[in-house]
Image 1 (cartoon, rainbow, N blue to C red):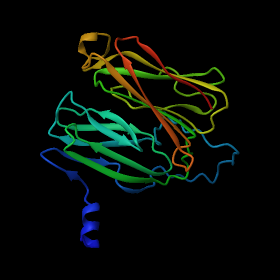
Image 2 (image 1 turned 135 degrees about the vertical axis):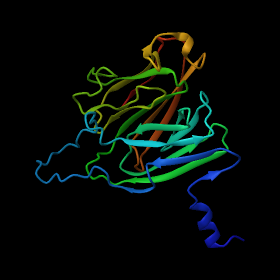
Image 3 (image 1 turned 30 degrees about the vertical axis):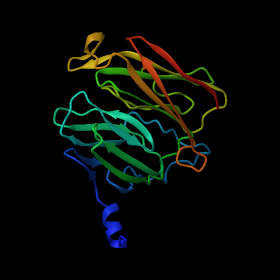
Image 4 (image 1 turned 180 degrees about the horizontal axis):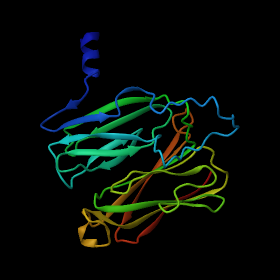
Length: 262
């Protein structure tokens, strides 16, 4: 029978690894996260939650940064944030950096190597008092590091959130819009209006060392798989989630992921 000390020693190891792969995770660090706290005592109180979307400062995004070794270009590892799996591509030196909008409260970040021989996981408690809670979250990722795939959301009042119009007048929008493949892109709303929503993904083009282009031959996969996860009432006892996978075969493909009534 294992002793309590042995159990605690095993469960608190910073990384679990088998074989030769190794993973380092620089940020976020496990534990309490109080970045971005500000004195708002001089601001007028409002009845509605503030807008999550702050693309200028990007202060509500967390950078997930580290390395997976040995490096295997073109072979993605897996990044899992709060149960949302996404392909994770690394540079030639094995390094990676992905933005993510953490929810208030407890968040989990896990990286698994492509060969599944190593993993690293941390638990982060987002303690920012000025971070509102998302009632509707849509997360897009895809499995081709050279492709640029875009998320499009039509809200009940007819507004269209996408890369050219990331912020909507009703307090929603794209709070993470990754432009260098393979995501994530994230749509968030704190107070979603009632009505019908329509969610699409578009294989817009490719991204390489020279920037954006439309050369089909440079992509890594014949069929790109876009993974879209819907999260309602995130980090609450009422949380619900649903995941869809959409095949994209050529530049210009536009696929309806889901139409739903909120």
